[in-house]
Length: 346
Image (tube, rainbow, N blue to C red):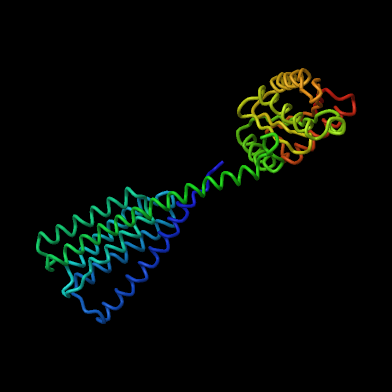
């Protein structure tokens, strides 16, 4: 069963929205510079134009290549930091452009993973250091140190936010697993329930058709189970159900699919088995159930039997899982009508 990764879903959508907003803002600056509303030198305008084209290309890549999310994020943020640094050098005004690095780093920690964000933080600091050393960013030392400290502070804050987001994501996945288990597992017998059988059985049937495999569907019913409940009570009935399931689980393979679809009715799905293997497994189950000794409160033991109906699905057939179950149920009906404690093939 696939986990629902809320954090990955969240990061993808935040990245998509962030890129879209970045495109809008960059396009606005591009238009304003083109009409000379914001006078800048030619290189600064060309820099903005290049960023606009880059953001558009990254947005298209993101929509078409979701599996490349981390790579797109890494490239995007490195280019953004480079752009901000270039604008700092090219700007002819005394504008504190590098302050945008703080917000860039914060979003990096939110939408990427911690490792990528740390790389971007280090790259930002090295870029500012290089600009300072080469004399392309002439502000007083106090302002420069304040800028460096703000980048470090935003990086630490972003890191803490990223840790918290990952914790929430882990909790959401665990909660999702619990809810999924409640929806698909029978609590009493710890087997799959009716809903799970149709959901998973449908997929297995389709897979069998694709791979040319044979599937055997076995309907099982505990004989005279109502009499057990009426005579010994529902508590004993619950114990019988659990012992019945445990006996079957000791025999079947790990990839065999067992589900409780009614009160005392169970279905076993065997994937990729031939008729001889199916017959051997069923006889083992029947014999194991016949030898069960279920202890009662009065000190005595209760013995049970079961009836089974088998339907073998071949890949060339066009049957659905519902019809396959109906066919197995018809065979089970015959088994019960002809004396119980036996198996009948459809």
